[in-house]
Structures are given as structure tokens and as C-alpha cells.
Image 1: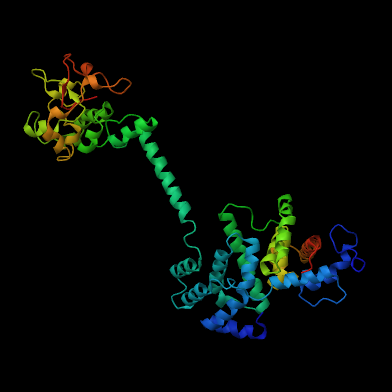
Image 2 (image 1 turned 45 degrees about the vertical axis):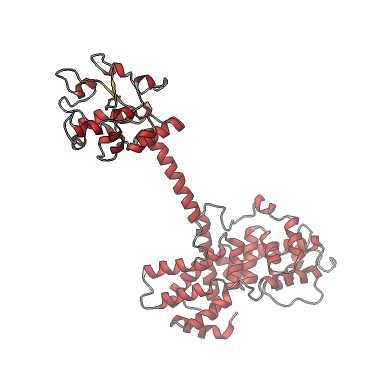
Length: 183
Length: 278
């Protein structure tokens, strides 16, 4: 998070300041890519589309850093859904926990991920969650959005977002306990 | 451990007791020291996910910067600039081209097969399709056969070229390929399509009538390879003697080739080296 300097950076970026835009990009892009790696099949492509749309609408945007992040992740989610539809694959973000999604939670995936304490290992664990829980955890923890913003993005009530996040975290903790490894 | 957080794990009663700790993790607040190790492990794991950028996390910055420069320029709001920016931000532009190429190859193959079954391919190719996968024999409308291809297929399968004779003679295209009257040197030389036999002209009857199929009662259409003057010069120069095809050489089992003798209304045996209708 950029913090108090975000407003200045955003105002400069609106006027075409490349350095200001680069600062915003470097601050958000890692979280954006990690979020898209959980929900999209082509995260780099979707991220590129997202930034194009952000740049296009930059002058019209009004709000603070939290609003900006919520706006950007909303765009990213929509672009990921479009990409998923165009590829005629499974929905990028199924709303309900399905049996197939539960099958993704395999001990093998957890064991593999826990062998190395790294971002990739943690990402593998999160991706093993049901998609809605994984997405909400990524938006809350990685994107740094509050429950209200996440609820708007995923189209659920804040209470439902909180419940889903708790379920996902409990499942993750269960995998940690199963593996017998404390990260 | 579990005494402190009796309901931490799913399926255990009292799960709501862990909610404050879970909310702390979600809000990235520091955990109390007395929290279960699993909670601490979970918090560390999520902190790693939300941590600083790793190599590759900033992939696409140059492209994004370029898109930003283009789109914030005065002319950057045009649709063309937007499309250009989107293209440049795609890290894998080649993705999707391979499936498209494969699709094109498959479509071309299917189209060729369909064309073969419809019978609109050039006669050598149509003949090849006929022999290879049972497409219809070359039709009368097929394009002219070239000398080299004709010589490589001196079988009745090339009779499509011969049958084209009547079609050519019935349409305007038939007239434009005539380089001379029947019997003229040019006509004779170019009319010697290999593998094709023709009926001898009867008195008072031109060749076209002798063939019984020609719709042009005055001037027979040229041999198929006459449609491209010069294409069969080699054949013409070699003369009819070079044509090894004869009615007797027609193999059995060629359904589209009528008997040469039946093609002659006077019962004459077709001669070699001349054009014929089939």
C-alpha cells in the first residue's frame, strides 16, 4: 500500500506522469497477479487487459487508495470472467462450493506445498480451496480490501463474505495440521 | 492447544470461538501470543502470499508503461490506440495462433475433400482423390489437364478430361480454346491427349458428331490439353505414337468410362491419340 502519497501519485498519473503510474503499478501488480493466478487461467493476459482499462478510466476515477484498489480488482475480476467465458471453460469464480471443487483439496497438493515455505507453496494451498473461498481470502488478505468492498466485488453480502473467508481459513489451518508442519 | 481454541478446525463444535483470530488474520493484524501455532502458521503463510514482489510479479511493467504512455497521449483515446495497447500488453501474443493454424489446415483438408466429392477439382487432383478415397471420378467441368500430369496418368481415370470435351464444346469457353479447325496442324498436334481415343470421322460427319456427345455439330471441342495452348506441346510433339493408351488398356472396374466402341455411333473403333468424349 502506498498510503498517504497515493493521492499525489494518482493525481500525477492522471496528468501523464509515467513515474507516478509506475509507482502505482509496482504497488498493485504483485497482488493483482497473485489474485488472478487463483481465479483466472491466463493471469498475465487478464492483468494486461485490466491495466489497459484502468489507464483508460484513470482520469474519470475519483476516490482514495482503497477505492482505487477495489475498482482495479473489480475490473480484474470482470476481465477474468470474460476470459473464462470466451474460453468456454469452467466459470472463473463459481459461487457455490461444488463437489468437484472439494476434490481439488487433495493431501498431495497440501504436502507438496508445505515442503517449501514460499509464496508458491502458499498459493498452491489457497488454490486448493473451493474457488469462492480462495477468491475471498485473496481479496481480503492479498488485495487488502475490507469485507464491504469484497462483498461488492463478488456479489455477496458482507456476512456471507466473512463466513466464506472463515471457512477457507479453517480449511487451510486444517491442511497445516494434517501436514504436521507449522509454517 | 485445542483447549484454547476448541472449535478452530472444521467439523468441530464451537467454531465461532476462533472467529476473532481469523478476523485478525484477514485484517493482517498481529496475533496474540497465546494463539494456537496453527493460527500463527496460517498467518505467516498468508503474509508470504501478500508479501513483497517476487521475480516475475512485475512482469508486463514495460508493456503497461508503454500502454500508459500511448493512452495518456492526446491521440491515445482513439480505438486504434486502445487496441494497440491491448495487443502490446499481451505477454503471449503467439498463443492461439497455433490452434488457428491447425484449424485452417483442418478446414482446408475438409474443404478439399468436400470439393473432391462435389467433383470440382482439377481432373488430376480429382483423379487422385478418386483413387485415394473414393471421390467421384473427374467431371466434365474440371479444369484442363496439363501435359505433365496427363502423361503421368495415362489411364482412363483421365477420362474426365475427355468428357470435358463435350462440356467445353457446348459453352463459350469451348470456342475460345480452339486454335484452328479440326484437322489443321495445330489442332491435330494439340488434340492428342494421352490415354484418350477418338472415333474416326465418318463421311459428312465431323469429329464432334462422330463422338456422339458433342453438342457442337460443326466444330468439335479441342482436346482437354488444348485448352492451354502450349501446355501440352511436348505431348503434341511426341505424336500419337507416344500415347500408350488404347481401348484394350482400359482396366476393368472404371465405372465412368463407357466403352470406346459404344461411343462411336457407326461402331468404328476409336483411334488413339485423338480427343474423345467419355
